[in-house]
Image (spheres, rainbow, N blue to C red):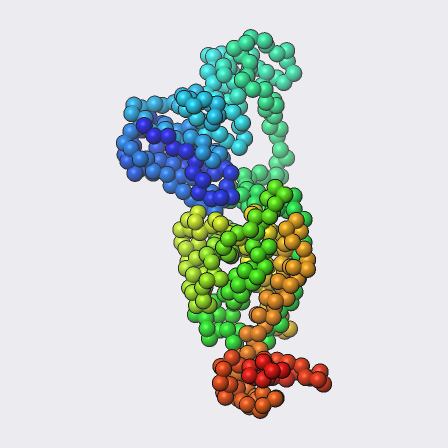
Length: 432
């Protein structure tokens, strides 16, 4: 009546993890019941029954199931065990069992009585024989005693010939093995996709910020003493000018994104998540802060959706609150660059930015130009405030005070013919 497949909720996920089966095979389910829960790299997904019927699972909790594979069937009569299945595409009329990462082809084997007795005696899992069509006593003995003479009975041969399943040796008592969480596996996959094949390079540049927070804090409500809202605001606009940093390498080509969606790395109490700030180049300063605050709350409430975590075109990772004065960020999958923000050196009033870029897509000259212009823009916030705080400051050309600036754009720093720093009003600057 219904076949439930693994949805493609995140563009980056190839496999999803089964985290909960909410019924048992053969149980009656109603329309809209949540029958299975999956985990993507960044969020959880609940899948509902679309009809009344009986549930039959083709996977188990902990499986990593491939996109578009059938994982649940809703039938009109109870079925306690799924039918024998094949891979997607093998037969249009055959039902499809979930394809996992660890098993290329999964079957429901038939066991002889002697095979079952041996399996129970040696406390083996029947899963190790999933690649067989029929399992008899000889198959179990082959597994228990590798190297013994193989049988040749045609019905006992496996449908495929995988490597012999390794026997688990006893590990030293001082070692404890724990399974890597699914979210960490995805993180490894995404970071490895660029770092393994790419030519990553990092350029560092310092920001001198005396007076920066005094200038910016009055404009902020939720992120006082944070450079992040300003970085999102200015970076998003610069990415329009430097579109190659808003792209990614793919099969010998460069794929340019048609919009800017900045990902902001968050790691508070629910693991590392890169949440999407959608099109901040079209937002004003206040809108960016409100959206960032909303995303942080959604992260803390564990209500992030796949839409909040996908289609990211450029990433910013901010470790300023974690005490890191210097670090090299790693590029995420389907990105060409990532901007890292280190901790403020309170003595020097300085922050180090690190831009890691994919050398297959661009080069150091472009990355340096981007960082240099970003530095100039960020530091201008502090310069404007310093000038505005000095009541007696005046334009060194026309002697007009800051309060008399008719254009309302403030004063800017220049260097005169003697090499001395001066402040000049906007009107004089245009003719400087």
